[in-house]
Image 1 (cartoon, rainbow, N blue to C red):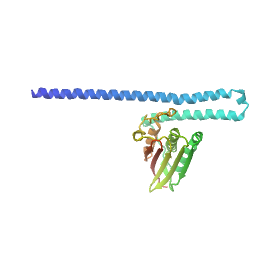
Image 2: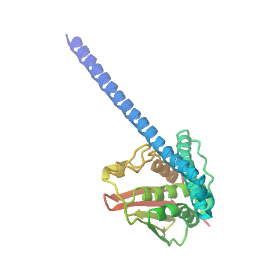
Image 3: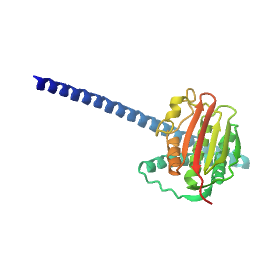
Length: 262
């Protein structure tokens, strides 16, 4: 009788365990399906918008009034160039994510001055900040900024953080970026006065495919890969990153990297 009861209990445990494992697998599958659907929708949006803009600009260039006006020609060709750069950036983001998944990213670490790389990233984002009538406050006060870095990936990770500041901005955007030397470390702070994030979002922003809910900001799109890439690259440079944010007031990213020996 005892063995019968023990057997029944074990059988029940097995059935219950199998049930919960099945439910968990189904929920995980559903989540993956939702992520895939969201990714495809966002990717479609990201490519559809610049393609439509390029199409309109090309049509405008066929207009005789535009053909005979050098200023307008430069304006519309500039739009085509910028939208093309935007699409290339999106393709690069997707390819980088694929390489990271396969762990095929090879960093070319060299002794470089972080201030030069940050300045390059600031130059890349300058036009976007101007378009939203924002401004940047730059205080590169670190007395030592020589680090071991891959110039492309380090610039990209800074650019991603600046791009997010613009993407999630409000009116009167202000981006503040500053550096300081703390012992054998270089500290970088990137601060904005955008829409901010709640605590749950802050705790998950470095997860791949995770995208913050933006309420009525329907124009904010993306793949949910940018900050995941940033975190991976910061780790690859033996650094650290953390975020602080207040909804409606803005976000601050704190980055720390070891200094290289001169």
